Image: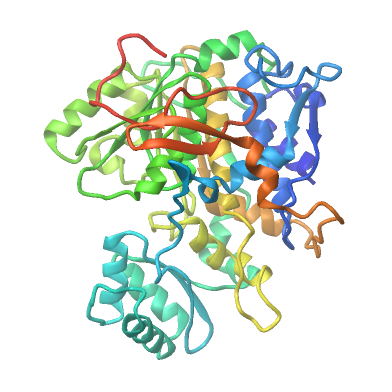
Length: 479
């Protein structure tokens, strides 16, 4: 099953199908689910590796085991560690897991279930406002928990979803796969590729067609694409930062920019920050926009997680970027895709699982909704974004007149999962996952916060340090 998705993804990334003959997967992930999480994890991680090192798997991967008969070997257990990396984070030897806020979970309603996300203060405030509740500042306390529970039990799930979203929060009614597929948003997603890599027409620039697969690129040419590339990172949470963390491991100069007014969890910054520099900049202000334009002019790659249309309102839509910065490879991530009634709606991995039917498919016999064993939509999307960037750089190298853009959505990955055959997915005897199995994939890095322990990158690239505060400028000498 992983092989089928791998072929699909590599085709969508305009890779040479012959490259896939070199792939060898070692072991199993130990991830159990009625849905093919192992296939998704292995395929997305493998396509990332292949995009980075090429079919030989050797030129940029000197620390990996020697290729067997010229094959690129992917360690499935390492993939597992990568897909649950946020749970393995340590700071100075102590666990530093962020996890979900007390209100971020499934709640029963008058007619079913709803999933809410309240990790960020502004989303938490929107939830309480939508429910007409006062904020006592103690989300984990019995008073707040009981108040939220009672308020939700008085409402229908879709009513809660609409009210919270209207208030600026994040929530989704738990749907069955059939309900989701038949909805306007599910219909809009039908037929869209899991990863979309395409040329964007620019005034005065002739862009080649993109319907035929690539002819393959050597590892040395791929190295020139990503090593030293300047990557502007406008992403948050897990999926986007995971992609840019991978690009930093392969030698890119990654500069993460956060808006000063939106807080990010410390644990998230530490876990997704290795190899990156970090600065704050208000790109909505005139001065910030001017600074951003200067960064874009000297960048090779822009990776962003803004909802469709958000950057366009700042004059940085796909067409504007292609016109002013045709040299850029632009990779974007969204929760729901670029079309349909939810395209501009906020969303996270857990929310997409609830809305799309995954929560029902992984739920208990009594109807309680469930989850995937890892945040596979986030991590899978991160690997695909990284792969798309590296493929875009290769295609730009061979077609310098072209402006290459890519898009990945969490809902697109959910759609693929739900399109596959459901199984009991019982792990073979002796193959069930143990935390101790993943220790060998961890690495210690120095950082301004202390020693950060994170999952080392797939293959053998490396980071020299954790997230490092910086000014919003490019390095004079690439890493």
